[in-house]
Length: 145
Image (tube, rainbow, N blue to C red):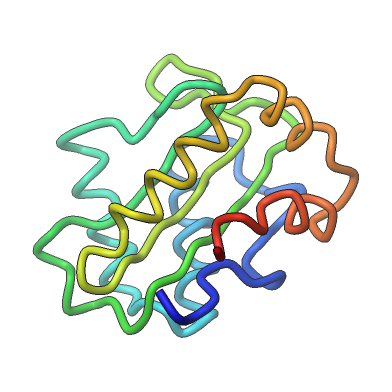
């Protein structure tokens, strides 16, 4: 991956959504605004969620589109929205909605990097404690490596 997949403008603290669907819309809208995906990709994020929950544990959900929506991706990118109040995600508490768009199966590599960060509860505590979007962005720089 030669392009930076996470840029400061793709990190939002706090998010405004109060439910799962709005959180998917919010993470997806950031990807659209960044020019990484078309609005149709966001629609496919709902198709994916309908077939399998993207809740991952440790307050993390990773909404992403279906394989059928690959042509809606213009470049690989990641959006991260942190919520002050937990969102009910199919009965789980989510504080981070991470939107992923991966060109040429790069989403698998991106997913594994995010999974590693969020598998460490101490790292998750740091991410929850970050005082601003800029601070959260700094803590997540390793996804760009």
